[in-house]
Figure 1 (cartoon, rainbow, N blue to C red):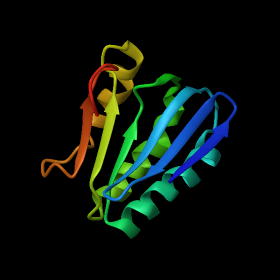
Figure 2 (tube, one colour):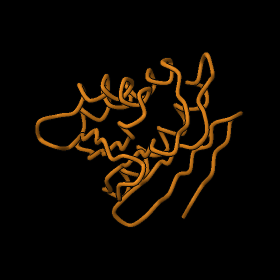
Figure 3 (cartoon, one colour):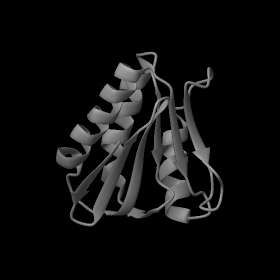
Figure 4 (cartoon, rainbow, N blue to C red):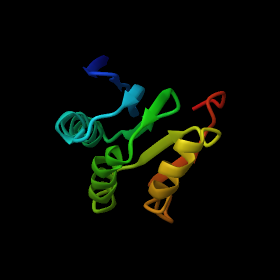
Length: 127
């Protein structure tokens, strides 16, 4: 099942599969306060992941730009996950300087147990 969420230049595609809940990011996140749109979408992915005992994946490799305030709801999400049992994989394209910088911050929130992985996949790498 796929749900598409759109706000201005940002499109999120929420894909529900048996063992994976995937939130694919497309376009650009330019909002000064993106939480109003992002938090419900991220909460929905987390809810589905918990209900299905599925891994939650977020794929940013097709995102063309994200401002730094977009990190705030992502950081909050990762803190919530650290307190639970969910498995999370976040994919980004480290060949893009802005993604390498932003996701370098998020990589600090990955855990040693491997439940939370922040992965430099490059745009041509398989997920």
